[in-house]
Length: 159
Image (cartoon, rainbow, N blue to C red):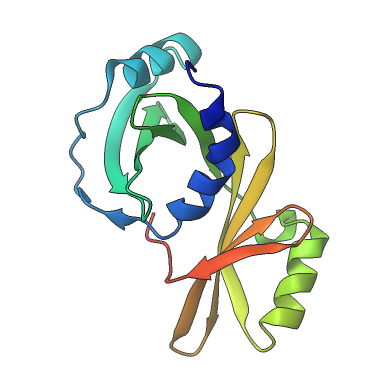
């Protein structure tokens, strides 16, 4: 990354990610920066881009979410508009959510059930989590630190 100041803003961009509107939500491949395809070739040889979507964050920052496939193996990676790697998205089992997060859900979202948890493994080694909570027709997408601290919530994330 050429600008170290951007490193300080990446957690902020991660927060904004959940409020992103999908601008290109088709199964076509977005016009990816060469740095994205170069990164994939170097770090994930043999994987092919199955789908990519470009999101415009509420800050105006654009993010690419890229779905990769190699045989039966799949992964999702996120990149900024310059093509710098941000994080990998991993679907996890409900039981894999850290206890502080499940405790937070139980107290903050009393009576809600949760589903579709994801772990975001950031380029710097840190992890954050996303989960959909629902109670009847009321559904929210919640973004958490691994400590159980709720970062923010919004409409259900359609990944």
